[in-house]
Image 1 (tube, rainbow, N blue to C red):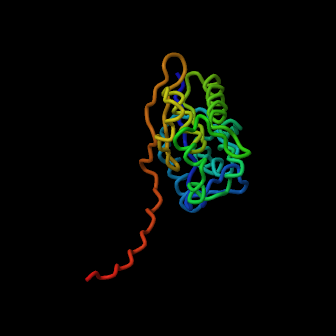
Image 2: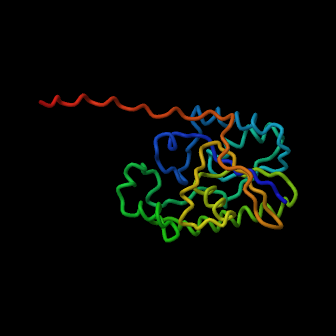
Length: 217
């Protein structure tokens, strides 16, 4: 069996402000994200990782770098681990997107969703699972890490759990989290989901003070 660590990249300014980065070039980790990447390397210092795979995007490669140095491993780029291609939604804020009719589709019935000029959710799941299967075939008895993106990791986990695609949004994958799957011969096993122990979390958003209401007579 292969033990697979699925790791989401650290925080960046798109995740912090609630925007869809997608494949936007030049999206790097912010200060918190850089600390999270270092903390991941410490968290996994005793794990006997034999190979390290990564999405092509900057934020995943930057998250992988401290772990690669600590383990003396080369980061192997795999296109199939890349983020969802959101098409015209790329770069937009979630606040704006929630007003669109398609938002309900992607939240409630994602199996029929195609992002405008982008990928289908079904297609993302298929290419991500193909990537994982190729990695597992290369490392049938190893502990392997693969760094990817939140929705991609949720889609992979949903596949191996046998969870219907329309329910994948019920899973939560935070920045710099570790999810552990055992894959190979026999039934897949989920050993850990969204583990963020030892990783600094973003500060909760500050609530605006409520304006005092008018006194009623």
